[in-house]
Image (cartoon, rainbow, N blue to C red; front, side, top):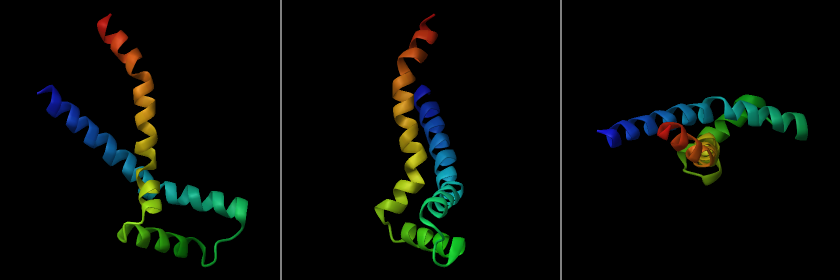
Length: 90
C-alpha cells in the first residue's frame, strides 16, 4: 500500500512540475532571451510554435525544458532525504 501511495505522489509531482515546465517555463525562457539577446524574430507566438513543434518531434532540448523542473526537483529531494528520515525517527 505504501508503494502505491508513493507512486501516486510521484506521479502528482511529475504532472505538476511538467505542467509548470510546459506552461510557465517557455515564457520565462522567452523573457530571458529577449532581455539578453534581443527580440525573437516573429515574437512570442513564433517562439511558442517552434517550441511546441519541437516537443511533438521529440527534440531533446524541448523535452529538457518540459522536464527541467522535475529533474531539478530530484537532487533537492535526495539532499533533504536524510533530514526527512531523521524527523520521522524522532
